[in-house]
Amino acid sequence: MSLQPVSFSKGRAHLPRLSTPYIPGRRDPRFWTNDEIDIVRRYYPTGGAAACLAHLPAHRTKSGVYVQAGKLGLTAKVGGGPKVRIETPPDFDETLKDAWSELDGKQRGAVNRLAERLGVPRWWLSQRARKLGLTMPHKKQPPWTAAEDALMAKVPLHNPDRCAEIFREHGFRRSPTAIMVRAKRIGLSRRFNEGFSARQAARILGFDDKTMTAYCISGELKASKRNGNRLPQQGGSRWIITPADLRRFVIDQLERIDFRKVDKFELVHLLTMVTDRETDIPSR
DNA sequence: CCGTACCGCGTTTTCCCGAC
DNA sequence: GTCGGGAAAACGCGGTACGG
Image 1 (tube, helix red, strand yellow):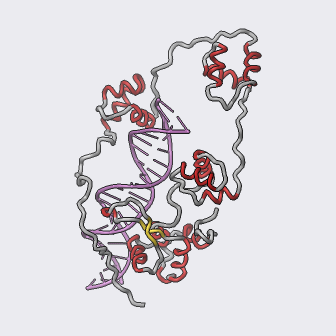
Image 2 (cartoon, chains in turn orange, yellow, brown; image 1 turned 60 degrees about the vertical axis):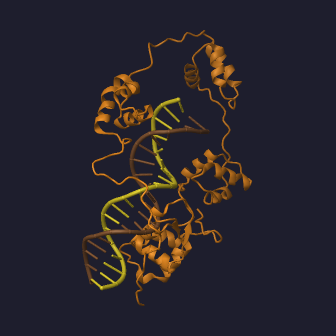
Image 3 (cartoon, rainbow, N blue to C red; image 1 turned 180 degrees about the vertical axis):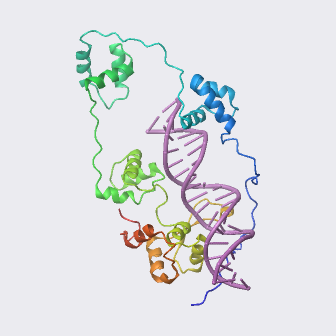
C-alpha cells in the first residue's frame, strides 16, 4: 500500500470574514463583568432585580439579573407583605370537598373561579385542597408503543412541531411536548441523528478530524454531505457518515486504526448496534 | 520532507433554566 | 406553554508544530 498525498484545497474563492477580528482584552458586553456581578450581589438581596437594574448598564435586563442572582444563590426580600389570616366558616372544608369533586380539571381557570366564588385567595384554596387530600383527575398519557419509540429515532427532535406532524402522519397522536419529554426520558439526543459528522467519526476511531476528512474526500470512507446554511467561511456543509459505512471502514481499514486511541465504548457500540436496514438509523 | 496532530477561528445549533 | 438570555457544544478547516 502506498500513501498518496491528499490536497485539502477545494479551489474556493477567498471570502472576507464576516465578523470583526478578535481583539485581546476586549469582551462582548453581553458577558457579565465582575463589577456587574458585584452590583447584583450587593443590591439584589434587599432591593431585588429593580434595584440592580438601576445600578447596571442599560443593556442589562431583568431576566439577566435573575440568572446572575440564581447563579450566586441569592434571594430577594422584596414583595410579599403582612401576613393575612384567611377567615372561613366552620363548614368550609365540607363545601370545598363538594365543590372540588364537581370541578372540571380540563377547563382552564376552574380553580380560579372556584376561589372567587368561595371568597378566598386562589393560592390558599389550592393549598387547603392539598391538605385535605383533594385531587384533580388528570388524563394519563397512554403508554408508548414500540412502534412509536421506533419512530422517535427518525423524527427531527430539534423541531418539536414537525415531530408531532410526523407522528400524526403515521397515525399517532402525541403533542410536541409529549415527544420532547419522551426523548429526554429514553435518552435520545435531540441533535442531528442521521449519521456521524467527520469530527464525531474521527473521535470514535482516534483519528484527527482532518485525517477523517481526507478519507471522506478520497472516497475510502463513503460519506455524503448534509445540506445546511453553513457558510464557506465555516468550511461549507457538513459530512454525514452513516453507522454502516463507518463500520465497513473499520473492518476494511483495521490496520490503520490505533486501538490505544479509539473511544472503546463508542466503537463497540458502533460495531454491535442493530440498525434499521433501510434507514441505517440505530433502533433502540 | 512528508504525513499527521494540535490549536484556534467564526459561526450555528443545542441545551438549560427562570420568568411570564 | 412559551419566550428569551446565556453559554456550551459542535462543526470543518486554515495554519503550523512535530515526529519519524
